[in-house]
Length: 139
Image (cartoon, rainbow, N blue to C red; front, side, top):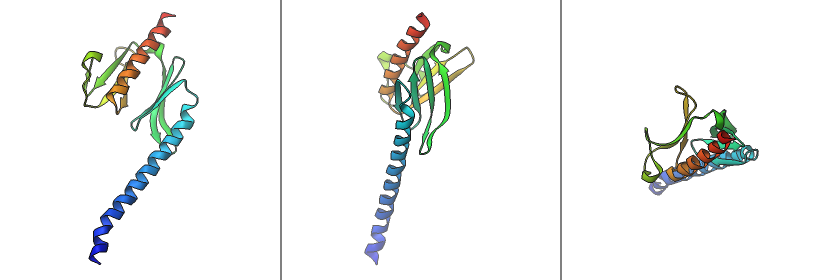
């Protein structure tokens, strides 16, 4: 009886881990279907981001699909910055810890932030989207 009670927390932990893995797998499968229509896309536990030509679409991943989708065009963006925590960082001084996000400024009062879990990936996307914005605005 005592051994059974000792193993119960382990069994509950295993059930929780199995459910968490199944839940994340369902999110990834929904993302794969969603990402097919984009030229470039990224999946993150915080947000999904897709690019088709000069149009960016982002939202939140769920098991049933992407929700809270928003779209905007790169030629409407005035600046793209890499944020770590609450401050803008430069590429030569990227910290290793903190909450990363891409900040898109569309005009003086309007901006939005797309969260990332990995600072390095956020930096690569920032550089890439800055180059794409330059291509769009120079034509």
